[in-house]
Amino acid sequence: MSIQNSGLGTPEQLRDPDYMPPLGTAIPLGIQHVLAMFVSNVTPAIIIAGAAGFGFGSNSPDFPNLIYMIQMSMLFAGIATLFQTIGFGPVGAKLPIVQGTSFAFIPIMIPLVAGKGVDAMAVLMGGIMVGGIFHACLAPFIGKIRFALPPLVTGLVVTMIGLALVKVGIQYAAGGVPAIGKPEFGSLQNWSVALVVIFVTLGVKFFTRGIASVAAVLIGLLVGYVVAYFLGMVSFVNVGRAAVFALPNPLHFGIEFSAGAIIGMCLMAFVSAVETVGDVSGITKGGAGRESTTEEIQGATYADGLGSAVAGIFGGLPNTSFSQNVGLVALTGVMSRHVVTIGAIFLIIAGFVPKVGAVVSSVPIEVLGGGVIVMFGMVVAAGISMLSDVDWNRRNMVIFAIAISIGLGLQLVPGALQHVPGTMMVLLASGLLPAAFIAIALNLILPEELPEEATEEISGGHASGPDT
Image 1: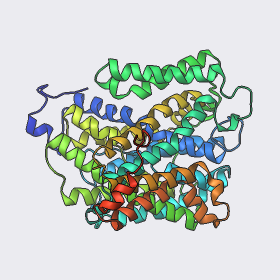
Image 2: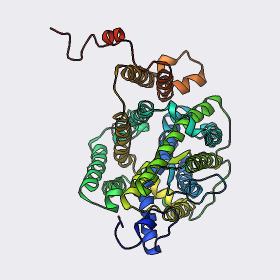
Image 3: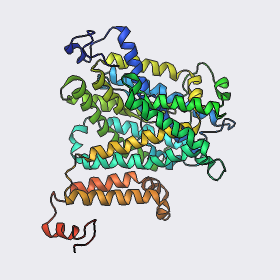
Image 4: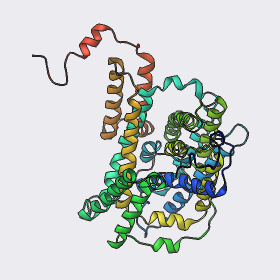
């Protein structure tokens, strides 16, 4: 839904974050922001619960915890968004920034909870709380440390995040991790449902316009959900059991502090903070045609970290600014932060209604797999797009080659770390942190240009084979 040149405001008003469009326009625009981020926002909770072992299977006594995590994903995405749009003190950019549960932390969170059940969530929440506080503490310095994260590093990190997650998409499309070894895993029915989601998403994205195109993944999931229902793959048992209204529980999963969780979350908070800086810049450039101010960048970083820390207290996952909504601001031409505030209110209301979480949890894993394949593939594509800004000289090629080889290699062969102490093994097995560390360190240490003889040595063999 684009309202540029619609007579609902002057160009100056539409570029003003403090402008309030008429409610008849502001409410649909706010809902549009929710539709654009809804699936991406709740998916991490489903993935982490599934990795821990209580994500699927309505008969499991721990299954209500999945519904609770989905509920918290919506509630604290809304609350963190209000931190950004309304703000208080130095907290908040006071810009139309939508917050949501971050994919970036998933490769770090999965090793912390994998197969350990609901009891492992206490350690994860401790890491999220401390990591959120650390994230907020980066606000005064974030502008000064951006030099350490050029497109070579950020593009590599985003690409690694996507590569770490694509396996999850394939597993879900085939029937889910718990189903491995069962005859139905990878069945034609499972793949058919996932492919319906993928093809419908592509069709809607490229052959429609406005709000339909923006919510293409959501529409694809809804169509896949209907198909799965007629195939007998959907159960509404938990929807009937879920309460109509419920408040969040402080320390729902308990709290436990682990060095591995804290270090991992703090390191990823650093990456997330830089990503938010980019989103703030994208908002001001796309919506107002100007550069972001220092106060806006610092306020956004404060809100990012505080939103994550508060979510962790109540059993939620870390959040960050959502890039798809940055693009939506540029698409609609409406810079109003009040529009996004309306969207945040809808998220908060949904977060107080467990039945909404129960409906989301009723989506078959194969349907979710189709959507996840698209979303995580887009994460990889976004990383590659960022890498297109890199000057691919020999120095940068060497940095990228070593970082991705070691990072991806450790991710694929975690057994290579069996003699490493437990905490360090968790951090290294993600592949993401070692790749990021290597890229940052080499980028700071290596000279801008390799000596001529080193360049010749590296390029001695060509991909097409030796010279003849």
